[in-house]
Amino acid sequence: MKGSKIMKRLKVIIIFAISLIAVSTVSAQDLLNTYFNGNKDSLVAAATNLINMPNPTFSQFKSDQINTTASSDNEPTNNATDYYFSIRDNHKIFAYKFTNKSPNTIILIHGVKSSAINYQKTAQMLQQATQAEVYALDLRGHGKSEGKPGDVDYINQYADDLANIVSSIRKNKPNGKIIIAGHSMGGGIALRYSMENYNDKVDGFLLFAPLLGNNSPAFQKEEASNNDSTEAFMKIHIARIIGLKMLNEINRHDNDSLPVLFFNLPIGTPLREYSYRANASMAPDNYIDGLKSVKVPLLVLVGDKDEAFVAEEQQKAVLENSKGEVKIIEGATHNGLRLNQKAFQLITKWFSKL
Image (tube, rainbow, N blue to C red; front, top):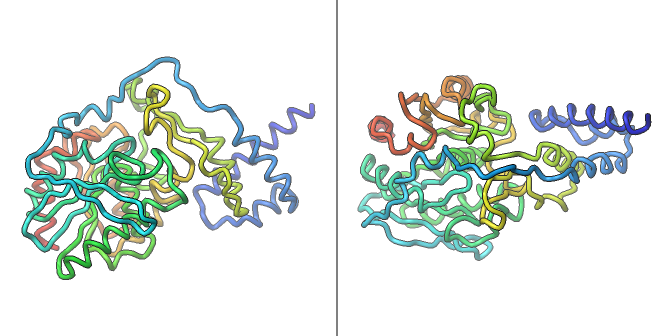
């Protein structure tokens, strides 16, 4: 009887905590008073139970169908050079630099479990479409950049790194335009950057099938997917996210390095897991806040065959919460979008108006 009461109480906590994740106005004091009678120790105990639940497992290896769609994108290009940005904590952030004699610059941010090496063709196509200089970045802990794979030192560090890079470019090109381009997770990081009031530092956002937010209505529902291999390739430790979010609400961050995002890759593979704080740094908690923060031109592209997001839902979310443009690309998949000729024709047109 005692065990069933505990589980019932945990279910109530989970329901409340899910709302906490989606609605940032809920305070730590509300959480304490409503479910723990002001007893912080009880909250910590409940959160610890959630955090310590076993990691998800995979019964068998299945390939990443979404990310193999654009496998040709990692073909080497002849006009890219290696470049390193020095960040405030003395870390080095790597980029493939596609040089062009232009005052304008595009910073391209890759998606989850990836790196700039897989975005070389996309970067080259961006350069050709806009005549801008392009940097295809390796995020901290990815590719050739320094840092622990799948982790950051604190929530929002990806966006802070991006701010340093923008400042470095602006110093060298004070009169040029700077556009932040991001694909999937890279688009979510761009929106987190925007939320930090960095809008006046850049001149536009170009987002390919972006991760709008952790509560985005655009996620494909599992029952809507016919691709079992896509569903099984990634698993999320929801209970741990909820527990850590609860602890964060009372300013406890000592367990934020624990993994919450898992990919079906061999044990020991870099980027097989992402920590809570890295996962929280990938996109806004609330997609509405992220989109409303954008005060510069915004172009969002999404394919009608996207395996991760529902194109119409993404379009609706962007149009209802920003002044941005949204274009649905017929026949384009999640990764195929960033190699789609029609998409780049639209980019050329949009960029010419900036």
